Image (cartoon, rainbow, N blue to C red):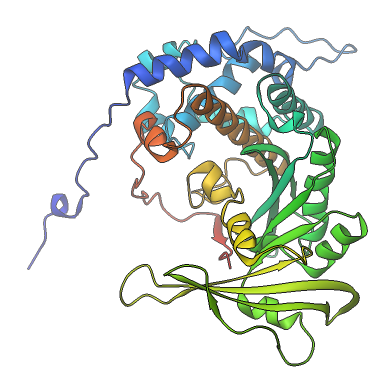
Amino acid sequence: MSIHASTLQQPPVAPRRPSPELLSALAWFARDVLRLDCLFNTVTVKRRRNPDRPVKRRRSAFRDPMICIDFLAMAWLGATRLSHIARYLRPRDDLAQLFGLPRFCDHTTAHNFLNAFHRTHVRQLDEANARLLREHGTALRASAPILDLDGAMRTVRRNGRRHDIVYRWAVAFCAGEAVAQALDQRAHEWRPVVSAALAAARERLAGKPRLVRVAGTCTSLPLLRALARQGMPFLASVTWPWALTQRPGPHTGTRWTWLDDDTRVRDLGTARAADSPRLPLRTVLFERAAVARGLPRQRIAVVTSMEDAECGTLDRLAASAATLRRFFDHGRWPLGDGKMPSSDPRGVAAYLHLAAIALNVLHLFARHVGEERAWPQLRARLRLVPSADPPRHRGPARAVATIEPVE
């Protein structure tokens, strides 16, 4: 029995039509309110010159500000991979012209642009993000900011005798805005990467953080010790096993009590950490009913320095913390979706900075047009690329990427 080849092909993906009114409003906001062309005018990736040996180059249709806006538009339209350009963006010159572009650049132009980044250019993108938030955001002007830290890790496996590359990426959020970030491919643990993002955020914030909320992905005992030494209250959302491991001896405390019909809580009290006797940690266990029948109950532990806060307050603070998944509205992008956008760590850092700036712009837009509470609906109305785009097989790859599961 033979099967015709056409029966094995996947059905064509129906083209999506983003909301023209919403796209026009976003283009106006980016062009006339934020003035993104002036914001990215300080990026000089394609304007490097050698005064000793000057070279006359042809004028490119995609200058630095234009190609930066191109990457932002890709993020707004849901193109989370460079491979989406040829399939979805290149035929849509009308959308490109809406954002002031002659057309969308091709895959090669985008890839070469990222590969040309140096450390100076990455800092230029970082300063552009800081300027955007200073002029139009609220996080950098807060007198009593609450800082959220989250991270993602990706291992890129390489064939042969070459060592694998492990990227650790930490982002600092404040008031729903990505304030600072750090990327390292040589760090063996989370503390130096998260500390770098925390230090960069503190340089930009107007006041000292009143609370630092840390996601379980990048929580470590050395990081909590560092926060305690700096006199910053902290709250970490971790798993039960990790929290119970930090407590010496038997686990005593109050009995289980109910916060509401679906959540019960047990406060284990404050105790010195097992591996750090000078660090007092308060541990509170939360257990929620399963989302659906057959699924396990949701269990989360809060490890904090706030000894006098009510359990309900800790639960609300932990649930409202900004995370990468909530901010980018994606489970894996921008670090873990598809093939790496660049083989150079500086190109990867540039891609992550552009993605953060794009979502900062979108969050500012949602705040100004009153769509902040309907964030998933706003993203869906702007999306051109289907959210579940099936991967295409393109032959054997030279590098295989794996994502570390989030606890």
